[in-house]
Length: 424
Image (cartoon, rainbow, N blue to C red; front, side):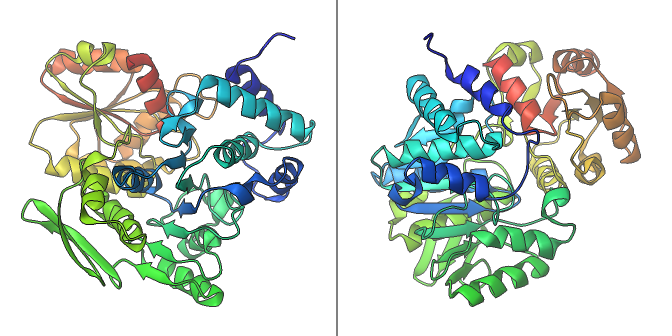
């Protein structure tokens, strides 16, 4: 038999279910059982849900744990450039051979049964984690929480809920309370839960679930506080005060994400050095990432080139705040979005900080919003808008008018992934 690489197996897995998203845990339980229930053999799990900030918070927790000498598994989604980014084994991205082997095993054990791509690849990650020694496992929810494929850990060491906002209404419900209820589905009986900044409607639901399950909460604004302080950052919990550098991840929202990560680390008993490493050493691509090398960056010349994958109204608000705090410079957006997102809500806060928007369709993505539709939304938001056939063409057109511009490529993690692959 000819050996097949991970790309071939992943393509086969895409055909196992007609829908990309179909929230239920039945298929996951069935496959885990066929594999001997590897979810019972994981190193202590920290399970992270929320609408915004999950990935950044996970990255900071991992940086802190690793600085303390801990070996850490990490699972995240979606990937940007390569699928391997989703699975980090004891600090290292999973190798091609290891990924191929574990995907093949899961595909065989599933025996042709219906299962979604995310479900079977999540099971593959769990199987790989169970077989590799480590001190902690960081699991990031894919969508929601209650019925997400990662929600199969009976007794995690800790859960985390980052800020909840309106997104994925077609799957999670059309009110903040309903969405918060889905996110709170990761809370387990008696297991401590760190809660990031929340609107009242979301917090009320989270507190209700935690009370019913006897899960101790560590809530922003009640049990811990964080904020900028004279060019640094002050974090305080019930054990004391930390004076720390600002996060190396850019934006006021990253201060709040750092707070949740720091609360996790403090609850695990880690020291100030680990907390400092968490906020200074975290790496998380496509979150206001400055592109300084590669073909696209070289094409930009003297212009500033940035990349961000935020894609919902809360991300638009956070991005607007970042742009408002950067040194003054004409800012031009190159934007591509999916047709499942609230484009008006995303673009509205950005209009005041933007000289123009050039819309693109996301290459190779069936759910892309057509560039013309994105441009129409930008005009509704009060932006000067145009379209281009590609990001490179959009960049060239902007630089023809303003060679010293700040250019931000934004609107979707799928667009960001394309950029990172092409510019790598």
